[in-house]
Picture 1 (cartoon, one colour):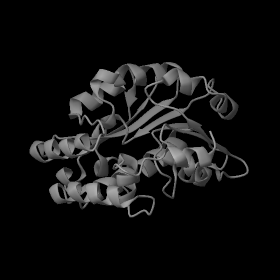
Picture 2 (tube, helix red, strand yellow; picture 1 turned 180 degrees about the vertical axis):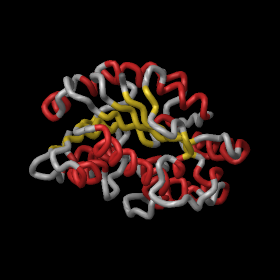
Picture 3 (cartoon, one colour; picture 1 turned 60 degrees about the horizontal axis):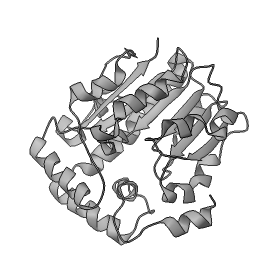
Picture 4 (cartoon, helix red, strand yellow; picture 1 turned 60 degrees about the vertical axis):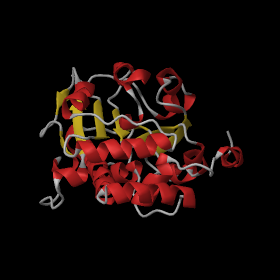
Length: 268
């Protein structure tokens, strides 16, 4: 699929979760309809900007930890979203220049900007798969994946701010298990997931805003997020609020402002 084709597929008449997230992060790749919807979210939950920033910060820290402390040199990042620098490959390659990263997303808008994800170091490699998380076989069978990654060596499966857009009816636990089953011992799962645990009423309103805009959302409890790591060895501090997962400095935000469960697990 070409970028020009992707541009024709982009629906600018309705808000889109990826473009709303871009707005929360202070990006420029969104439209008025996205800003209006994001504004409704911010009215209900002003800390959404903190939540978005802490999600990105967790991804940075988790990537560095896996590269520095666990020898990971390969990543499969699904639900990539609109590129926001530093992207995952930039974080990984700053630690290990030969890191290889495969990005996957089903959003035509992400495909439009995919060239931003291809700016690899000379030693490493990045590529992009236009595919849907709910079709794991399409991701695992993509030639771009086998060309870039060696699945006989550990791979970090990165699922940042994705799974709360996958309701239980779509089988998220089975899909994550299938993806991990294709990866060898020493591989990792790193994920972040919005939660209603600290302010259920506010998050009920937020879920309603997204669903009314046409986006499926299911936020989950700490126990429910922990289920994605069954059979894995959780790194300390286990399932933790995003800003409390190995912070670089003393956290200043409250748990309710962040409202993200995050964790990293290693496959035995």
